[in-house]
Length: 183
Length: 398
Image 1 (cartoon, rainbow over the protein chains, first blue to last red):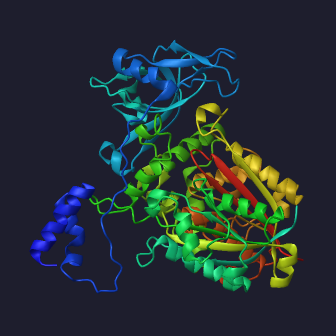
Image 2 (spheres, chains in turn orange, cyan):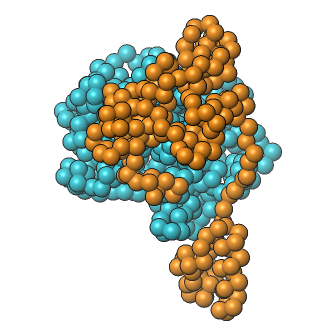
């Protein structure tokens, strides 16, 4: 391909896959300028992408409460009285419907680790803490990120409290947790 | 149920990148090898089970259809299985059932995975994008947004085990890494043969507390296949059948909040128990000659010693310290190099592990051949904190 054709190729793929032109040039200039043999494996940029208007179904109220009222709700089973958070509409053990109960937003870390390497989507956040926490008044654990000044201060048994982002989207990331002592 | 034997097998090399093959071209190679090994052609295959894990890796939904087509098996029944890291084990379990039930006589079980077409253009490596593809398997509403990787999930379990039992220590985990990389040096298909010291492992860069770089398996491209046959057919085809005498499987609650604890993997315990029961094994450490355990991480190999009942709960670390699991030990674990040394081509992994055990049972493992290998265990696990486990017991004829 000549220079003009290559530029068009970069523009096309940058638009199609959302990869900056400079990155495409780094990886494909040799190929497009004819450095590879005709029978060499040919690599192409590509992307699999689906856009959603996803329904939270029976969990919808949980996310509205986060977004509108900065409140965390659990789901209490009418039969066994266990409280789920993350919530579910029916108890998976009793097969009975649950009802919404407001939670305090405090809890305890039951397992935690520090991530030093991660996926493309989270690479700018490193290092960060992933933990399972058990919220007070619930019987189950949930996965969350813990924000802390000193990651070595975080351990199993550390008490944590919910904080809410200024800008909330109606997603689980509207809430994050910090150790209570560090407030 | 009818007896089921492995009558043929084949595998491609396990490596980081098969730049010159697509996933169905890779699958074709393994399938052809397995058919040649069994002395049959494609027309004699009655049905197929494909183990393919991640559609994003393959850049294709329903990739099984294209594998089936490429292998020239059109109009024969087939089904694709996906249970995360345990995909290969699950494919074998379904293949076993196809033949044991009497529905079919000859079943191709084939696993394939090509992950490293995923690519992060910014940092110019594959892994962060591979992990992004995998993160779609975490609960999309509650877990995925926290950025938890497979490694951090298993790290949480290993930390919980450490807190309860004081092991595995970081040094014990390093020993497992040294062992598996070393074992891989004798396996011609292995991706990561290496002579390492304990210090090399301990000093490698941190990935997620407590795992360092060498505590993790690598992402691998490869394909492995076995041909399963009924007893009558097996007798005609081979004088070295490898019998599948035990099959155990369990799938745990994927939301860890619904489990009593995370310091042991109950699905693994249930699967091992069932496989041993079926094979008539009472004391696995005495009655097994070798095992291929799913060492996605060093710490989980140590947890697997306990979950497969090689020792009491909480004693896992001692089996690497007292060298029980070394190639010269009482019960060698991962002579192939395991996922850490040989590689983790997800859908193919459980089938590669089965290939390895069968190779020893057929006395065809070359330089790493275990003497008098008569009975072996394959453990295939996958999913968030070991959602799935499949265990298989394999035995030689005499």
